[in-house]
Image (cartoon, rainbow, N blue to C red):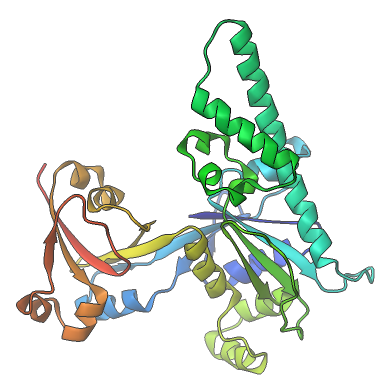
Amino acid sequence: MKLAIIGLPESGRSTIFAALSGARGEASQKDQRVSAIKVMDERIDFLSNMYSPKKTTYAQVECLLPSETLGGGSENAVWNQARICDALIHVVRNFTDAMGTTPDVKGDFRKIEDEMILSDLMVVDKRLERIDLDLKRGKKPDEHEHTLLKTCKEMLESGQPLRMSQEIATSPVLRGFTFLSSKPQLVIVNNDDDNESLPALDIGPGNIELSMARGRLEMDIASMTPEEAKEFLVEYHIEKSALDRVIRSSYSILNLISFFTVGEDEVKAWTIKRGTHALDAAGEIHSDIQKGFIRAEVLSYADLLQYGSHKEAKKVGRVRLEGKEYIVEDGDIINFRFNV
């Protein structure tokens, strides 16, 4: 999962990036704008203590801070970088800046929305022009794609982001266009250190969530030791760090879950879409396991917790053998049986 941090200049994008990556992030050696962040999960900790593996592997979230200097400094450089990401973290300023300018949360949010809508509209228009040209040459277009693109054009011209239509936002036909306004979005209102309130903001329907962070404060906390951070979290009434809130919201807007594989060699968390079948989950581990799939031996984390061990859970019939069409549930512990 890759998240792009977007927002207007001086909104605090870099501060939020530092807050998210400071505690558990690992910067890329090739690109300092990218940070791989460990997804802490108490279930992995429990499984690791139980199985004492040689290696414990948590899920990861990758955060990207798009740079205006890349792409030749073009106007669309940031958007071109954001397009390759799975979801967007939209940072909106809610503090007085260095020039003494008071924040305009609603206006700033809408400016970025409008930029994305305009960028998508340019992509749609370019593709429709190409289709019209092909028609003149006698080439028949994909009617379904053509219809969907015309719907996109109507929405965008009326100022609507494409995420407002589930059919459009999730269409496999349109996936290759990487429309910005169709991407799931987490809006972070970036407050002053002492401001704990979330302002009223109409973010509209679609796959979008609203959250609040005190970026500068949480950036400082992220650089502290766990003991130091704990004191500040209590003092400023922060129940969960910005990082943990972003990860939780990201899993929600992207409709993601985790399943686990366990053993003496490794305990590992795997991230998949909710509704994924066992055969496809096997492919996340290795194509050979998917190719030679026989059965999935499944035990839920809740049952393991209740009965204390795999052996005891199996005695009472809580370990199940499932086929290719089984829909993996969040927290499933799976051993894939396969033959290649």
